[in-house]
Image 1 (cartoon, rainbow, N blue to C red):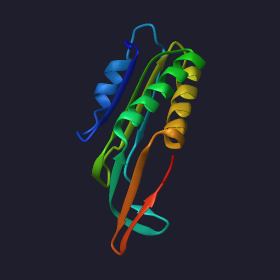
Image 2 (cartoon, rainbow, N blue to C red):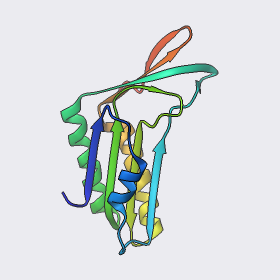
Image 3 (tube, one colour):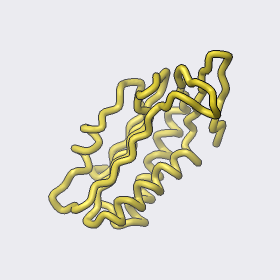
Image 4 (cartoon, rainbow, N blue to C red):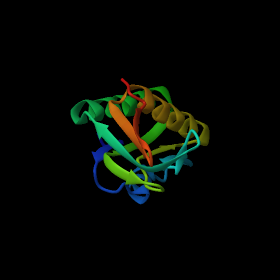
Length: 140
C-alpha cells in the first residue's frame, strides 16, 4: 500500500527513513514515536534486550494496525517499523511515524498504533540483567 510502510528487521531502524516516508506537502502535522532501550527496569540495570517475533503474523498485525489507523483517524501516511534481535542501551526497537493534515489526528493515530502494537503484535522482549534474564510482555 502506498500510504503504509511496515518493517520487521534485524537491521538498525532509521528515523529518517520513517520521516521521509510520511512527509507530504498536504500534511501539517507529523508525529513520531521512537522507543529506545533504557538502562534499567524495576531498579535493576539492563544490559541488553532481545526481541523475538513470529514474523509473518507480526507483519500482518502491524499492517492491520496501520490500516485501522488510516480508517479511524484522518491520517495521510503511517510507518510502523520494529527491530528484532539483540539491542543495547540507547538502541531503537520501534519507530512509528504518522502524517496528517492536522496535528491532533497524527498524535491520536500514533498513540493508537504504539498501544495496539504492544497489545496485539507477536513480538516478545527478553531483558538481560547482571544476575539473569526475564521475558516481559509475553503476549499475545
